[in-house]
Image (tube, rainbow, N blue to C red):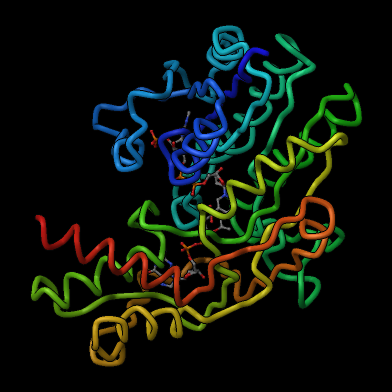
Length: 324
Ligand code: NAP
Ligand code: F7E
């Protein structure tokens, strides 16, 4: 039997790297849509030792001919659309770019699937940011959406296009509504990695303080390595559907800082400085996911708690900083 082929957009991102590794380990031929940049973007694939194992196809999500060509070249049976302008903070400064990449980009991939191989299975990287100003204390697949950023709005467009292509054209198109997930491969602009990097620099005498915005915000944080497994499971189901993927626990940014600093024997109160520069025009104050459906239908549960996740990230940053 021929190995399955997968196309991953956003393969150079945090989730793209973990997902590519998971798919390679399962015997897939893995192709990635790779946007040209003037700087090196392959560091995550190298850290996982798979940079030479994946086939990169040059292209951009905003360019329909790129997504069609990548479908043709990869002959993908499964398509994972993880590419996005994914940083919420940036989405107010670049709302049109965010709409084009994060919103219309998903449509370009759906169109490529519909045109080139409508039998291919499609995964959309939806997000808890679509819940924004939460309408229920614990958010599930039936909770009404209320996005609070241009990023959240763009993702909601992509989410509904995924549902619409499933209902209009019968595509096997699923959406994973994933809550925040982190790892040592997380981008440095996101708060967990910003904290674990700063903790390592402060501990090693390179930095004194850490400037943060709203540390009362609460998030449901899990480990990216666990979450890519849920993506794959969704595409193995007979019927396409939408699933919340979360831990079911929520923690303040302040308490996440406490864990990170304490791991190296420091007190966060001695180093964290509040800087309004990092406040957002509209904040998502609290997110808490209900992963009951993913557990019941996919047999998936988060296996890494926040303490384990944050200490893993601090340890990785301690090693990186000491090597610099
Ligand atoms: P990430 O690390 O920011 O990765 C984003 C990826 O998209 C990168 O590979 C990036 O390429 C690529 N990309 C950006 N613009 C592109 C364009 N115009 N054309 C082609 N590729 C482009 O994000 P992540 O944390 O892995 O998240 C993966 C997906 O899940 C994203 O869609 C994100 O919005 C969504 N999501 C994430 C979370 C989370 O907590 N991590 C939760 C819910 C949903 P470069 O490397 O060249 O920049
Ligand atoms: O912020 C607060 C900030 O940028 C978390 C993306 O992967 O998850 C991510 O979006 C919270 C917010 O992630 C700083 O205001 C305080 O309340 O780490 P973040 P995010 O905005 O939740 C969702 C699910 C996605 O889909 C996104 O793609 O932390 N916060 N001080 C700060 N945040 C940052 N970045 N920097 C600070 O200094």
